[in-house]
Length: 301
Length: 309
Image 1 (cartoon, rainbow over the protein chains, first blue to last red):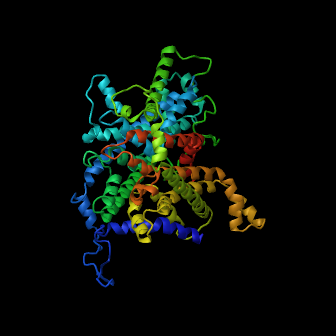
Image 2 (cartoon, helix red, strand yellow; image 1 turned 45 degrees about the horizontal axis):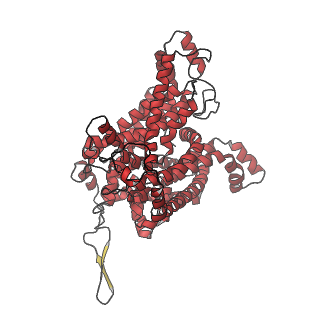
Image 3 (spheres, one colour; image 1 turned 90 degrees about the horizontal axis):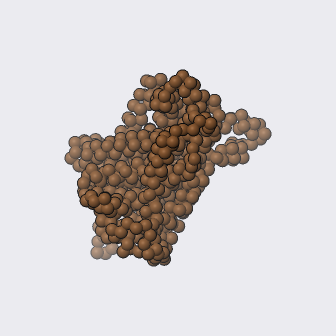
């Protein structure tokens, strides 16, 4: 057991602890060295302590981030919420709809299923590029189709909301198959007898859906919604590769914001670490509240 | 894989295991095969599904078709599906760029991440599943928490550590970075699998004279093979599609992975879309094939792994 724990601590716990520590300092690319070394003419190296070296600043970075003094935390937070909620709602809604449609005997069912799952089979970064290709301002398929029906082409990435909606569309496209397959699996665990009994009792299709299907899907739904929320919240590639934060960083979500803080311009490691801790706290609070809400409704897990 | 141990898609109420997505019986609908649905309903049903399929497949088909067009037609208002088909884009990507090198790099990174990740996670998962030791609960909790932040919080500290070790711009850095995400995830999933293997088997093996290691290696691991396969596959895919670390840690062309290399084709100014479409097709075809083979196991794995937490 001991070596395992050791490997794990080195690989996982150490970076984690280090990240939390960084968020309490003011480390940037410019001040990360504890010593400044100057090579003299003779080739000898003279080192002296760096007077501006990164130091422990406690919660200063946090207050500066949360008051908006550095970075754009609250704007990115808002964008992240809009992004997550719209994506998950559509993922679940469309996924459920398609799962219900596919969960009945009919011709070509297997064929539809294969086609509908296809977006999931494509690596995410390829999909992100594909959608950027489609949403190009000039010669993009979507703008050309708009032009073909007599509308003006849209400069998708020049406006915060159109830019964000391209990302939402792309992410819905690539997230629906997972929901569909998972919910289809859930639908098949609902005993057919329940539906038959409901039919005999005179329930309409809609009533059966509300009173048999939805409750039966509850366990699966709860899992996939939580998973989907966390995944979407952290969905780095779509935003990073598709909108790239255009226009002017306005469509950045928290994870891409943290990334840019860490790796663009003067690299602000402490800022990025602070973002990391804040993102983590948001997700933790969310999952705790989510579990509590479910437990209150009598779900035992 | 989640913090949510819930009843799952893979087991129905009677406890009969069933794979997600595999219609074991014509269930759900109360309609019996003898009764036919009225034709307008049928038409609407098929129309909806056809439209959804077109939306699902359309973007990919358009990329595929574009990849066979010369650049002048890729960058034009022309909407015809096939126009002067050519393999020139593929030829250029395969011979004039580092595409093959990037592919190799991606394979190396993904393969090593998978092998190391599954190995460490299997031992750790087994330890967590079978032994009581101080800090066990904390370790489990940390793993759960780690799953919520792919990369974001770890990327900076990992970068700083890598820089100190002089590993920036090398493939091992990417493997290690990917492992920080893969290991907690795999451990959690595999612990679930190990929990489902009765401890009586371990005890029997030990009575027969197996040590801890032999028990693990010869009794438990073979039984957990499906779990290992799913975990390994998922790790491979994650490492294969990883963008953030690859963009941050790698600086020279010959060390790029595909996820980063492709960005070179489409800078914000003067993007070379015709080459991008060709490489996208080259990447997607093998990935999609593998995916179809493994996909149904993946869903059940994802939703089931956390159940026994």
